[in-house]
Image (cartoon, rainbow, N blue to C red; front, side):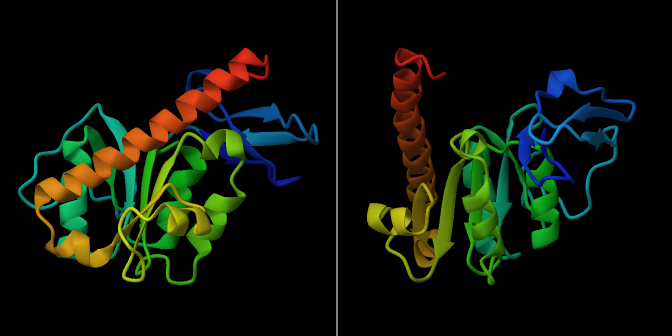
Length: 204
């Protein structure tokens, strides 16, 4: 669970198995030592979540992905590609819903469309995230102003990969799935090397 200390605003990542699920709890912030309250998990699904496009089966028990896109056929195509990659999907309708999900869960895959994040608040949120959490997320930006797969644009936007909206709308389903698979593989390979290096130097 991701949680922000209300006193010093430090972003913290708590192991899910250490948090009581059926009762409220608290712990001391490791930075400011003030108590931080953790509410019991809610059993009802959050409003606005879309786990699959019409006609697609719901796939439970998979690693979750966050698809932040306006309602459109393009969003349905991306959700289908995400599910084909082995993820379940959540598609919040507003930035606030997206922030709520990111606050309490780690999503190994996050996809953000310019049409959803018009004021770049989500981009700023992801950039300010603690790096120990950010490294666990493959972040993809969809825009009409980028070349799909351009590494320099991705670096400039502080994301792991970029996709032109036209490619998402017009390319074949296989091409969209191949892009997603490549982005995920690149992210995994990059941080495998990083994590191995940290372990070798005794920093992890």
